[in-house]
Length: 421
Length: 149
Image (tube, rainbow over all chains, first blue to last red; front, side, top):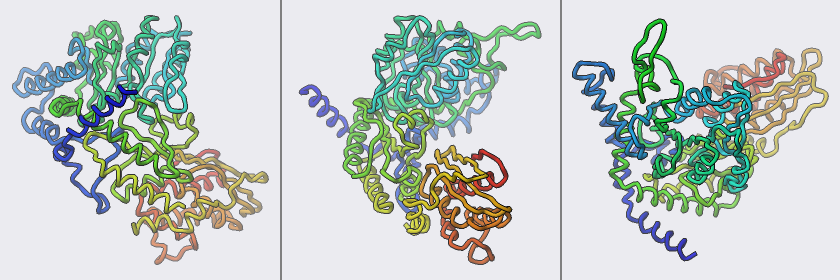
């Protein structure tokens, strides 16, 4: 108990070091009003905002470097290639990959998971095999595996969770067996905010020689990710949820696995040589990057990581955690509000329902006050079914949100209850 | 909050709380299920048609206040109407909430359904208001499933 109190105090101290107004000044989009009220942006789990330095890096590319990458002998193409490959190096350091070629650029987490499904799953999974996912997955980490299971006559197994939204790890251990060929689980749940103990889950899977894919869409923006320490086999994340433009994203894979896998898409840039008889595929990472990628967006992702590195991620995480704690306390104190997802370890996400008020009505009323939240099933319909709600309203925080914004949210929720009483 | 009070008027809130004709209709000879995948709204509309006239109409399901109130008030408005009148009302309602029909200037049969005019200020909620109507239209025309996506 004493250590928990000590770490809480430590966290509060760190959070108090955070100069949120200085940080907010880095994000031009936050300066606007919506319906005459200051924008309160609490939809960060869907898409986070972009700091000025990332916008400027994108503009600079378009103004001074825009050209197609690789193979170009001319000046601009070389500049673009250097910037694009530079972003890959930045990503490599960000997640501590062994080699930058293990960082495949994709459109986002969804494409990353689909790449592994096609490249790894379709090659190595066959009839009677089993894939394990969890009860709290986003549709992006359910549907591709379901499609694969259907195609291969393989089985999909689901790790259940308790009423707090925590995975039942004993059940998980029981699901692992010699038929298991892949585990695919989220780092942080987008609908509940639960942080899963992925390191120990990976260790368990590896006892059976089973590779593990982590859906890091909500993990990468809020957690320090070290793929070597985690020893995960694949880790997919999206740029637009971590302060970069849409169209950027990464799927990390261990080189040994990526090399064995089939390519994802065929086309230009992913080949060494092509004849009508045979194509020899390119080495990593190009083997998985057919066609012209979202060059400006991926360079933007590199700039977003540079930004994150410049602001102390540890302090940012502590501040976010304290903000989530405060928001949880405020909303729990309102009669009629029920929080969905009360796991001990949570990040960023506060999902809630109000008795007798549909989340879409909550969303509309909050929007009138300039508050952006998401209302719906959050692409996690099985989670909604598990908690027996049609949908939830979800506030999700970033390190630029403030306690004052939480107060505006709480006060407006009280107003919602008043309207519907 | 003026646009908001236009949207969430007392009558709408009342129908949301106490939806009318909110039950399965055992004697129905037409029914259809409507989904709004965006919101997760789901409802079933039951119709009992006799000689092309709506003898009875009910609904059940779950959804937001706007979709529930719209369904509730729709059932009240449709009772006794013939098929043609029901379709005309659907068209007028749809045109009103999408801003194509000025319910105060153009003659229409909307009556107390005009209360939903405020929905046009909230484009993302138009689907909520029209879900029951689309579903009713599908039931009238013997389609079993309708989605607003």
